[in-house]
Length: 327
Image (cartoon, rainbow, N blue to C red; front, side, top):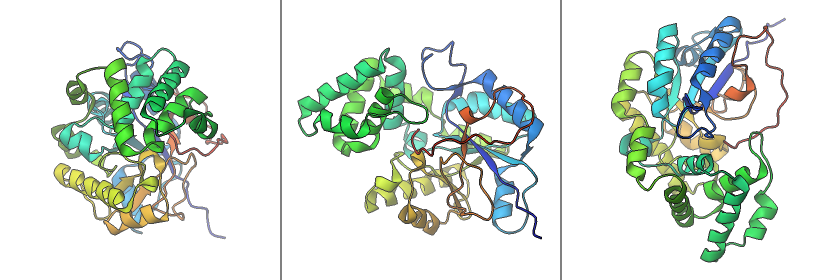
């Protein structure tokens, strides 16, 4: 009888910072002390692996240990350099980081971050949804009542109002209107100086190179952080080409390397383009454990919110949660 392959627990992180004492206390971020507590829990009950360990397994040259766990960090925030990198290095751990090209190399504000900080700085998500509807009526191309009928419902982590604002501004609207409205809302509710805000928010190339020289690894995460499965062929090509350019600038490998689909949005065509660019694997946001016998271009990940933030009794992750591709 063949022994079952160990299932990989991959944990997904975004913002990690001392959020309660920050100027954005409502930002959906993981407190740094909770991050440290979660590392305690993971190290107590899992065998922590590095991205290089996973590459070796996927190349057929090794095997996963029992209860393997990999740490991944999306979107290339300066949080990852300021707080995550020192914490991992002090414990002898390695993480896998996914910065989009435009924010890393140009410090261009991503639309997803405009939306997140607008939501974090607005006291009432329902009122923000109403404000968005008023802007849509003024534009005249979309009827808010129709959009609400199909997009105003909660997801795994957000109430209906927040989820509605995210869906409409992330991918429902055409690019020109989406860019216009996210910019307007960000300037009104967060900051009129987007360039300065972005300069503080994102990793720099020097940060990324220093982290990689110290044992961290980097993978592709698009150019503008677009929903890949809903992009045109040209947009998808630009997203993947941007990932290749970012990794080349960092000095990280593309051939045999790592890719993370923004928002977990992928399909067979997306996976083919990613594979053809040279990447060996791709990470989703499906909240499940992953078997090495599965598709390496669809490695599932748990959210940090799915796991304890302090050492708890040993119990494998058995929580049944709804599949969700939204962040």
